[in-house]
Length: 102
Image (cartoon, rainbow, N blue to C red):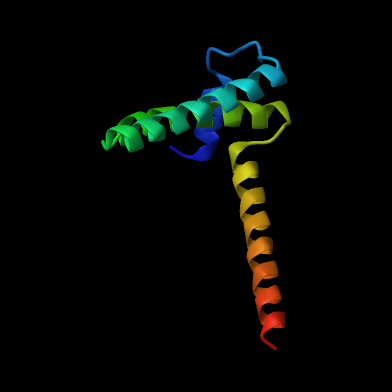
């Protein structure tokens, strides 16, 4: 599945009419909490819960995409902006390291 297909899937999901942006942000935080809870259980029980983490990551992605859409962004927009941000951060770190050792 490509990002534009996932964007359409989210747009066509059961969450229409669009849910309030605040609700979507809180739902995203809740889903991220569920990811963390599965990892906590993994640590506590010394067992692999990757299958459960995968499902919770999917729920998180759904709400993340819906939140992006509420701002007029696609999932591809978010991914592209993040790559630019991370590349800029990497370049800044490289610049600081080079300045330190000159």
